[in-house]
Length: 264
Length: 336
Image (cartoon, rainbow over all chains, first blue to last red):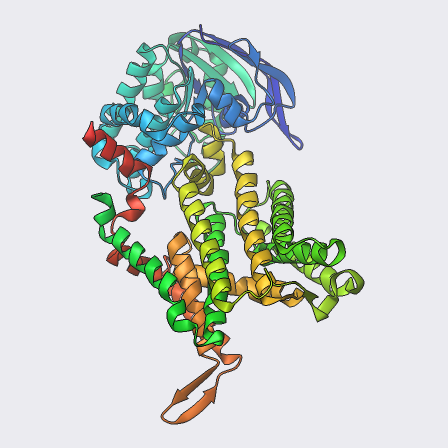
């Protein structure tokens, strides 16, 4: 069974405490939304989980093994894959080559031809088979996001972290991403989805984690979290500050679907 | 068989045939023979730099220094320990590989301009050390190296360098089309994303330095045994700039483009020493480098893929660039 334990994780950059004692567990193929206002520490947490950052305190355990401090490629090979907030396809490589990179990295003795069938299946699933021979740089932003999702399937991780999968994506492609998440989740994968698209995150998630100023302020099912006063305050507080600074529409308390923000 | 009848393979066979047959014409002119042999040396340097910088994205300026390490190691061992040129070449190659390994490790966290500056500093330190440690390196007088073997002819030297060029090109093409090539290109595009996809970026970054250092170390040790002398000036930044310019003009993401670019650039630079026009003889001297510089500026401004690579690609290699992992996969799929 998939098991991720984040135990009292701290991460600081100089005097800035980006993560402040964050703890949570994932058991099984849960579909988790990770939200929080500006500077909450969402991307920092992601970077700690996938090994880009070494935590300044605490531990991360994945499937019975401590992984904090391991390099990203080791964590990826152990089954924790991620996408990036800003799409990071290998632009001067073809779509198929992009797909082969994780597969080949995961299987050091295998040959490329061992994976072409799987790569085609994944591309067909993502409705991208007609783009297989195109360079990634020629794809639209949304297609590049799909390509990143495709690469993850080639990596075949147990836990998939998606950082802003819906940002700047055409509604049609958004449907494909929705379908991707649901189908892959049904196949037994766990998801952590970071998004500012509240409607999507509340619809998709079975469980919500809310970060604010590096602290986990809520953890529960979406309806409970939605009504949590601490969560409302975190978002409303931000809106009030923004209103004072420049004046934008204040959302009503409890109506988190309207909350906006940017990532940490 | 069908594959061998493709235009690019035919062109390749014709090109190699011409290179093999050239001494029949060149043997009457030792000067021209030496120029072409030297051009092969630069073709190895430019194509290996294309692998390092164009394909793997590591903008190193240490290439000429590594050829010097190969040459000086071979020369010093021959002088002080009486090793044969072959033993010296092997030792020089290994030494260049070791230095490449150290540079690779030291440069793990350096990218772009920082890597370039680091390798420039390394090259200059080495050059100054070779200049100043006169008793050990012969300083600016240059270190004498024995010929590869007693009585070696210009034609034989030509073939030695040609074989070295073809062998290193074959090795580099094999690497570029393999798992190694796939990973270093992913690394060039985005190190963090490649790492997140399971690629051990540290290993491949060090490996690309070691492999290219071995190639240029071997080329340097062999070539300077043919020249008979190695001097610190061959490692100065101008020489490295020439190699980079050759690769850029040929097409720095193309091993063949860079090699052909280097070959023609080197030959042209020699031919431009003195030109005859309407009965007048003009000595261009250093101005030929200015003309070469202009060509480089033109390439950088108007043809970032290089001047030769698009032509080669259009005439002979149509689709060859796409004959990478993707195309092979497609072909296998269709066969199935």
